[in-house]
Image (cartoon, rainbow, N blue to C red):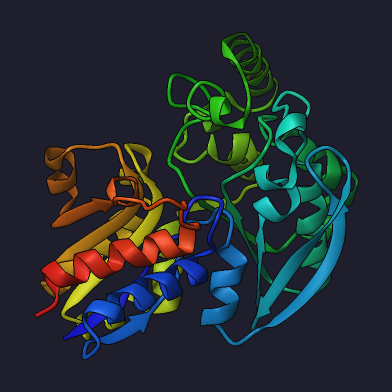
Length: 339
């Protein structure tokens, strides 16, 4: 039996590649004669450049840009042909800020603007920015300020923003009320952020604020739309470049993994991309997650055939590391699905 293992990053503990290795290790423990094909994926959020640099033959350069709170951080530019790929999370990611310092009202996207300029400096005719997993909610204001005096450097280049979510800039599912709590904002802070976003949209272009993906990355999606970027679904972009359809057709079963299988994961992210590709190929899909927060009806609606949670795996006296726990879960699931 051939198993396609195509995970997203697994919470903050494991990259997509590390998650794939953990699943394969556990699966082969129970089904040693199965053939396992590893295909790490991304939705545009953290790990976007990692996944694409592994899937594509390109050159990687490293630049230093301001992080979300102004501290210098390294960020990469992946050049493949005439296209440069960059990742917002490398310049403005939540993981770059210690939990005690997280403040989405203070975090800026200015480093993302400098990363775009670094991509333009490579001479690429097309720049693709993956957006997701950021620390701030500035509506892309910092990004625009960073490129304001250098707009000619972006002129004539095709800009693409690959978002991990289709959320609009404002409203219940927008950048502030939909995502800022996970970045450390309480209710009062979310209300203030929402007011700032509304003022920013009024000042710039409110019509773009309601576009799908405008709320991605705390509104970096909106900033890119203001620059004239085309918005695409990050999962679909990566899946196409990585050859997901072809790989799943060659398998008997698709297995994907992520940290939390919740309602947001069912809105066009990696789980949905893998499931849709498997459905097109007539293959079942199994999801391994740190925790499962949606019911069978919701899972069935997107075509998931089975979902299993690591937090339901019995633990011994010593708690397991994330990769070992994921491997144990994969071994248990293999006993059900391998034949």
